[in-house]
Image (cartoon, rainbow, N blue to C red; front, top):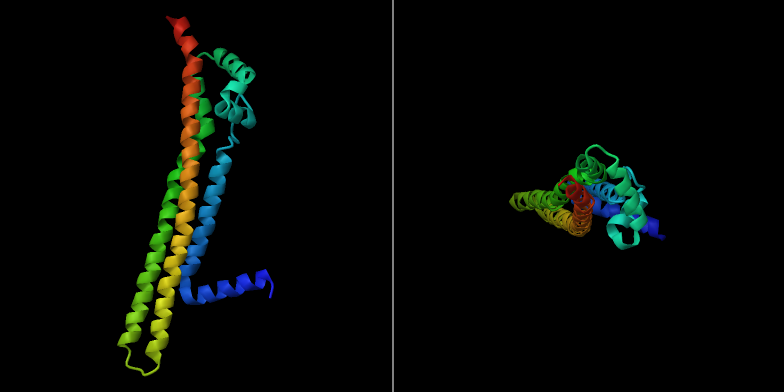
Length: 198
């Protein structure tokens, strides 16, 4: 039995035990994965202006090695009528997409354990329904199915939620660091302007 058939067999067993909530969790997992990939990509500055995405990354992460790039950026800013506003627009291009998407990603990640908890409640309903049944053999099957659904969905929700929360938190930390470095760069570029305007 190869790996693909083992995975498909395991997935079939989990889906039969976990019910529709298991499949809802799988769909949510794909949505979370897509959100995290797009967040990671947005931190590579695909919508960068004035400089290339790679130049922005080097300037923000290794400012000491990017004096020529900083000089070009400073020259570009100095030709603008309002350098402060121009830098704000550049910041919007760099950071607007991840700034909007992080809250949504955290909401989806938080929904995974809650959806697993919904599966727990649904499984407990089945379990108690089986205990209340008067048939001789049916209660054991119903109780087993209910406990199986409760455990599978709870575990799946946690397996999806915990690692993705760690990854999203690391991405958010990287985003916050990049924004802070951009603010420092902004104040560094505007300081000569302030000095000449006095």
